[in-house]
Image 1 (cartoon, rainbow, N blue to C red):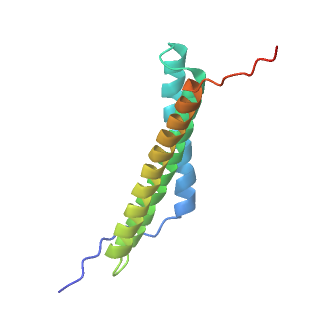
Image 2 (cartoon, rainbow, N blue to C red):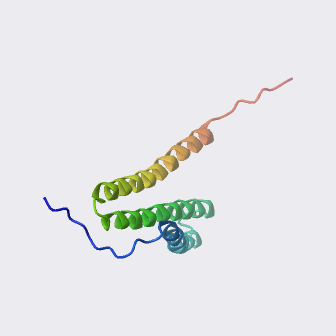
Image 3 (cartoon, helix red, strand yellow):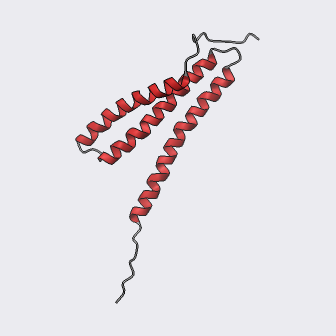
Length: 120
């Protein structure tokens, strides 16, 4: 069976693209969240939190895309490409789960009434 390779050009620097992805995602999500905060759809803290999360996810996605493409250009790189894509998906999923767990923790703490001892 003939192995399939894709000519993806010269391998690209993954770290450089992670940084580019972070910058692009920060610009996009920052602008969108700024607009939402200005129109009072979300709070400033929510805007910052979402921008940070989207920036991180954009960095992961861009790095994953470049690494995956680099592996697809290598002979025998299909398994490595699938592995790189899977790791990227897990990273983005992990950020979603972390945010969800933090939200649950803070909501639980906000709803918890602490009884103060009264000394007479």
